[in-house]
Image 1 (tube, rainbow, N blue to C red):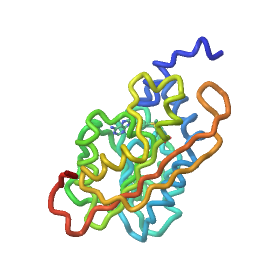
Image 2: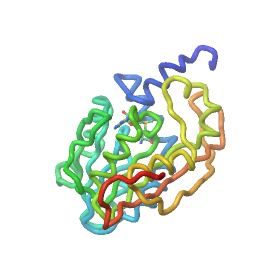
Image 3: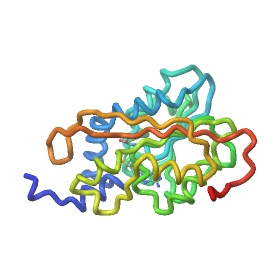
Length: 229
Ligand SMILES: C[S@@+](CC[C@H](N)C(=O)[O-])C[C@H]1O[C@@H](n2cnc3c(N)ncnc32)[C@H](O)[C@@H]1O
């Protein structure tokens, strides 16, 4: 029952799934967020042979959907959770053995790849947990190739702030706040789409969730972070 739910623990598992409860959280997110994740992969407009980075893959059950987008895609996933890493390794054993997919642990602050590595980058439901958002957005920009595209997807602040667990460590964004962050990191905002969908909440009720996909690019002529002012 709702009264007995430990919302701090729910928030902790969403931000960093661990142990048996983390595995369950991963399965729950796989169901609840499938539409958000697929819409994000669609918005990436991935072409043949491109290198794709995902930040915060959860249990990684959606990765096979990405390979249906074009031949020769190479996927790399980073996540801070050892529990999610083990789940994703098990769910994607074939793609890993075919050397199409690669999963590693990361520290949540830096992205362990060279500048200009990926053609496409996406992340769904992780922006709330970025500890230094400006630094992390700059990291994402750094590892994206010039001309590359990145899609960042999150629940809209007005929707999220009604949920009982977000007071425990979530930073919330709407389109305007996210655009300022991403422009400061050097990105050009190509498009932000807002969508409504029906989802079952962690408390078991059906809600209309508003989510945003921010599609941003790195210019071919980019020459260092610029001030907005
Ligand atoms: C709320 S879950 C979302 C999982 C999946 N993307 C989805 O939408 O269902 C957040 C995931 O991102 C990971 N995560 C949180 N902060 C992260 C960071 N700074 N860098 C990489 N992964 C992070 C967590 O371990 C977890 O697997």
